[in-house]
Amino acid sequence: MTRIRISPVTRLNGFWSVEVEVKDGQVVDARSSGIFFRGLELILMGRDPRDAGYLTERICGICSSAHATASALGLEDAFGLTVPANGVLLRNLIFGGDLLQNHLRHFYLMTLPDFVQGPDRPPFIPRYEADYRFTERESENLYQHYLEQLEMSRKSHEMTVLFGGKIPHTHGILAGGGTVPPDADKVRQFGAMLDQVSRFIEEKMVPDAYLLADRYPEYFEVGEGYRNLISYGMFQEPGTPGERVFKGGTVIDGQAGELDPDKITEQVTRSWYADDKPLHPARGRTIPAPGKEEGYSWVKAPRYNGLPFETGPLARLWLRGDYRRGYAAMDRLLARVLEARLVASLMKKWLAALDPGQPVFQSYELPDSGEGVGLTGAMRGALGHWFRMKGRRLTAYQVVTPSAWNLSPRDDGGQPGPVEKALLGTPIADPKNPIEIGRVIRSYDPCLACAAHIVFLQGEKRVFKI
Ligand code: NFE
Ligand code: MG
Image (cartoon, rainbow, N blue to C red; front, side, top):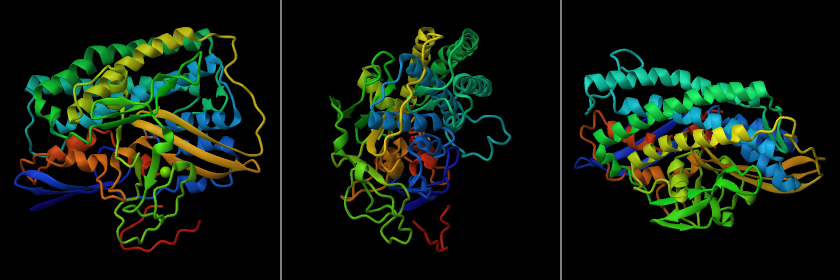
């Protein structure tokens, strides 16, 4: 038995430790540990609910517009607001641009270095000695696209800035709608950049993804998870903002089902939090317990109907019927790339539908008390914000992120989290160069800043005041 610990895992946001046991060339046990504590939910207590969007955006610099969206949806739910069509379109365009930036960057910057050697200089060295299968010519091409992608992901972010003021941590998404009235000049600039990014996705990223799949076909088997998928839906329908363009739902071993948000809980038996039973996020708590013996992660364990579910582009495309080949590492990678192409084409329609001169925002009076939930799709999957307020101040706020679903530790019943499960059976050719682990775990596009939402240094005692 060989034990391999990768800590912290590189090429992702935040601090993550993955430990596996290898026997007879295969992973037989795996543990996913979020090794830093954020406590963003505690920071929100006593604040004006209208600030929740700006504060929760700080959970993460790469999916900030998703947190802004979830927070806005939660407040709109509590206050009974209906966002005007122009406001929905603006928000879809801001979030869409951010999603494109994330998906572009994940495929080229995070994923490809696990499969392509790259030039013999940093950041491509040091690297694992492994089965790099592309020809020299293909590797050079992919490296060129890697560099072009930097320009494309910058343009995607510039798009979001036109309607969102800044990125990350946009000011353009808030309860009631958007903030930047569209005009012909902004629409034209946005459209020109969107055309360039769409062309890159269509002509380079999609073919590159299929080439990758062609060279590494075993990853259509390796890294298969529970075959349970969950999505809360993504992008409001502009005319009917209660509806979603990507519908929410669940898939259990190929069977699609309706989403019932009452069945969501978080469990913390193996997480460094003090609770002893599963709690629905509307009644959830964040009580850090860093000394807890049986804990091994700062990530809680979200479960649906008591079961682990994975979330992300694969879940969303599966529910749309756009991608249903399988549930393994390569399926996740392909679904993410195909989702980028789909979102870019939807954004063209949303841009054309903007109506300069029409309102972008519904104003409202802040009520004294209330409660609400904002469920949406972040780039990495299902994102929910649940809150309560009293005396115009927040009294409870719980965030459950996609990476918490995917990277969660074992739960009350001992069931491994989705990534832990997906690692089981992964063949490791050389324990000194365990590149296969990276290929499986990065297929989820992990983000620990979100998952663990004060760094806790091992061996040092910290007292948390709450
Ligand atoms: Ni920090 Fe995030 C996204 C959220 S977590 S990246 O997408 O919510 O997975
Ligand atoms: Mg949380």
